[in-house]
Image (tube, rainbow over the protein chains, first blue to last red):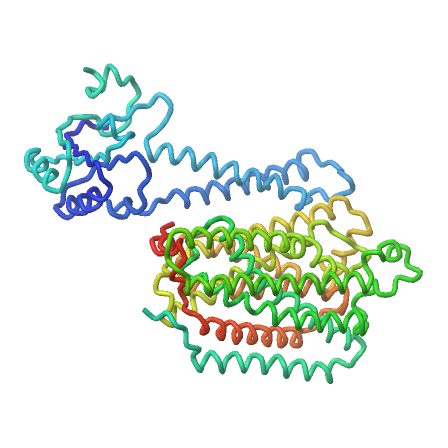
Amino acid sequence: MAVKKFVVGSFDDEAVLFPAVKKVRQAGYKIHDVYTPFPIHGLDHAMGLRETSLHTAGFIYGITGTTTALSFMGWVFTTDWPMNIGGKPHFPLPAFIPITFELTVLFSAVGMVMTFMYLCQMAPFVKKHIFHPRQTDDLFVMAIELSDKTSAEEVKGFLSSVGAKEINEQTAEAGWWLGRFDKEDKVFAK
Amino acid sequence: MKDQFVVPARLKTTSFVLVGIGLLTLLIGIFALGGEHGPTRFWAGLLQNSTFFLMVVLASTFFICVTTLAHGGWQMAFRRVPEAISMTVPVLSVIVLVVLGFLIFGNKGHIYHWLHPEGDRILEFKSPFLNAGFISTMTVITLALWSILTIKLRRMSLAEDKMLLDHESRKALIWKGTVWCGLFAVVYALSMGSTTPWIWLMSIDAHWFSTMYSWYTFASTWVSGLSLIALFVIYLKSKGYLEMVNEEHLHDLGKFMFAFSVFWTYLWFSQYMLIWYANMPEETIYYKPRVWGEFRPVFFLNLIINFICPLLILMKRNSKRNYTLVAFMGGLIIFGHWLDFFQMVMPATVKHLYFPWYELGLGLGFVGLIIYLTAQQLAKAPLTAKNHPYLKESIIHHT
């Protein structure tokens, strides 16, 4: 990933944040992300994020689980090691259904958690830059990515005009990295 | 805001035509079904349709009950719809009472062979439970409680419209609703959740029993009832009523239909697999005509309509928010569970699979009756419970 320049504005009210997000998007600035202490309904639409494809991934993981369970059990009990259990056929579908169901759930659950972690860039020991220490407490923090054509002063002025309380400029790693906060991230370095 | 429903002439005509088809079928049935399996088929069709549609409209009362008990707010924007559907319960109760009266006391169609337990050790053993007096008493009590509690819940909701708007009386309203709905939940659990399907439907196969049966019947009628609510909501929406209802509410109804279709399949499979695994003749006899006999196509069609279709079609978010698709699935699910009741009743009574013109005709008659009565009830009161404290929660509802 790359180190980028951001202008960070913090809001203390949800009612100010929504119109601000709208105006920032209209002005054409690129919102890196908005950090909130709790999930806010409709913020994803306001930010113009596309619908997640996590459920499609979940469906694919699920049918992979179904196929794995049925084909493995089928292979074991018809080809590899056929056994006579209570006089049932060698491919007793009803008896396989509970296991197939479990494997479907297991595959889709684990797969979706992994995909979610990847999409949100979260993993054990992996760090992401924290724009404001209070973004998990009581502030709504909006980070705007600066391009070559946008000047920091202009974005700062714009943010204060839409109601941001605290505005500053940060240079930080945009993605995730493996390491330590106290040595590598300036917010905590002081 | 269009808040007062006026029954459109076209809806009225449609319902009259459907009821007419039902009555005509009944009349033809009296004359045409005089053959070898005639009278049995005549009464079996009536039993299947009357119990199925009563249980489906009763699901609306249960919907009001569970959402009230869970302090749910999202359904307030269209709660008058399940209320109106539920007011069909007393009428259909009378029909069921008449049909069961003929079956038990008239011994019509020889549907309940537990009426004559003499010489049959199993039926003699079960006769303290399976006898005309006990069963009919249970039926009358159940139907009376269902009707009384349904009317009570409806009256309470209508009384809200004339209520004072202060904090205390609103609190009292919530508490009163909780108490009456709690009472209905207990009655429903003890009737629909256990005894009623035993005495009306499972006792057709009096030698056989399944502990999953009532749950299975409940799941079948509950998902159909939810589909019926969705269908009426979509109809009213298409006519420009229910302005506060939007895709968010439809999405939640669609989720309900999806989830309970899967729940039904879970019970369908649990009942089947345990019997298949144990492989004991006195239990597998139930599935002999259904899986390996004439009713095999119906049995698997049932699974396709009620499981595969909802699973694949209603899985996507966009399809649950699509009015046309949810309406189509609602109709399909109700038909599917009607077919489910068909395969529950017919193999033990009629014993042969005929083209179900008679049963379908009766079904259309019941559909017409439900449409007519529900439309009448919808027109009697404003479509929004404007004084309910949770209404705002429903207006701003967001999934």
